[in-house]
Length: 65
Image (tube, rainbow, N blue to C red; front, side):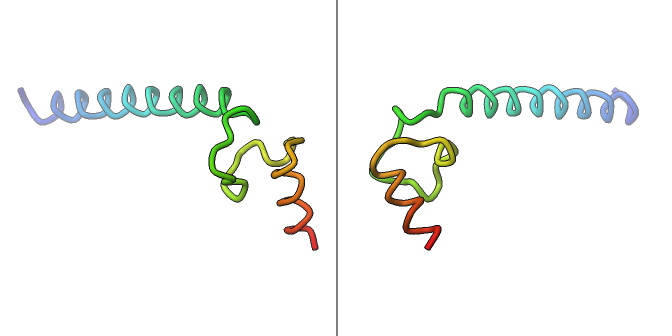
């Protein structure tokens, strides 16, 4: 294996790993909804903007003051 082949294989591996990670993140974001809320973690919730749960509404009201 020469240097050029090594670099190509490394680049291919990084691209495939990056695609795998990106698809995992997108799938995770899709399934993160209000029903997945745990332990009142509203601060870090990706669904906070559209949340209608009492805890989320209270947190949004506290932050907007």
